[in-house]
Length: 234
Image (cartoon, rainbow, N blue to C red; front, side, top):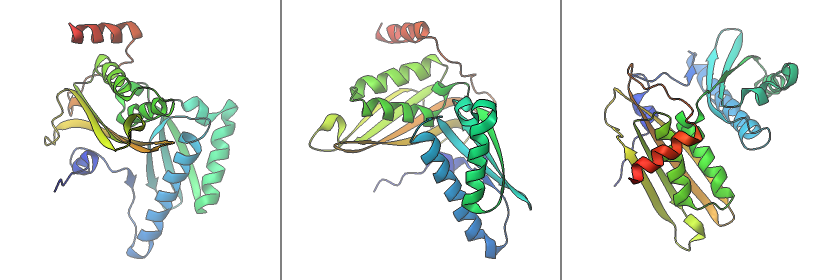
């Protein structure tokens, strides 16, 4: 049996911080947990699965006695905030109505989408929906991530790839992916691409170096990405 461990869960409490940070008495724990899930699902459905497609990669939740603090990490924060903050005020109001508590909403920008595993997975999903060739898409995303400074990338696709009759898996790896090393900063992201012929699961592992020694991920110019690809072929 293949017993797999989620790379993020494996590191939480050791080298990674929790995505939800709060304490609760036993009687309120289940209620708070359900509220967190509602917030995450609402943000995902509103900002990632329909316009404005703000590319929200991570939602962190903190609670105080009086309010719930929600931190969004998005590649396009301007679409979340809107003109003069109109959209973020509307989103805050909708979240307050959803859980009936006071919300403090903050948006942080992800400056390097090529350095975020979740955004890479979502990007692959969008291209597969447009019927792009899956091998070419995987190679392009790996080239972009490596050119941006990643030390290793692994991408796994599962499902009816290319509309094939039988579901299968396609995996490409470049560089180093030390999954069992707790000091290794391995970012993990998933996405589901829903096509006419079925769902395709996408998993991305991104190795940035050891904690404290991570490379600074930068947006690779197209020319640099092409150079990187040419160098690999050579």
